[in-house]
Length: 233
Image (cartoon, rainbow, N blue to C red):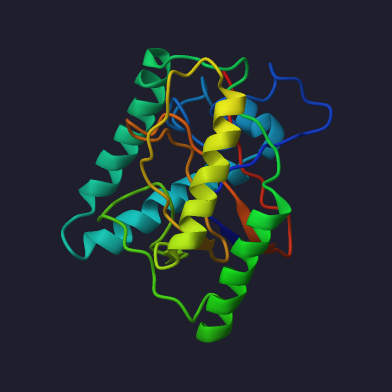
């Protein structure tokens, strides 16, 4: 499986399941850890033991990787922090929209520029993902399982015209989507992140001041669906 995105997020639709049946902490710990039957009954009813086992392996993999450096405790500490901020940050934010997310397309002109940049870089480096350097994550960071499925990052800052084009279009779309906002200031434009086989992106909230963000799906090639979850208000 390969997915190439500026940042990963999409929305799961499970036929026959109402929101009351499928929600937080069902496929992966979001506000509570996978511990105790109180938070695991929905997980087991939908996925059986597979998701619980996958999460346990996720955390064990991190501890195994960084335990060799004497930093295995960073994994559990960062995981507690991820869940902690998932709980405390959203209530303190202003809801500018009814739902909190919107899916739309960038213009053909902008997307064509991004595709040409992507194709040029992949052509220069050979087959993805082996042709790009691994992204550098802090020790014990649990936003991705980078210890077993390294992510790659291609910066777009070397192409100032492309960077400015993306910024301008995203700003226009955000202003149209959030008319109540008094203004916008640019924070960061990471580039194209490549998620490799068996990648996991843990549900998390962005740090302040990343209030509004946009994701552009540049390219993907998968052998099976890779459902990612976004939660509204």
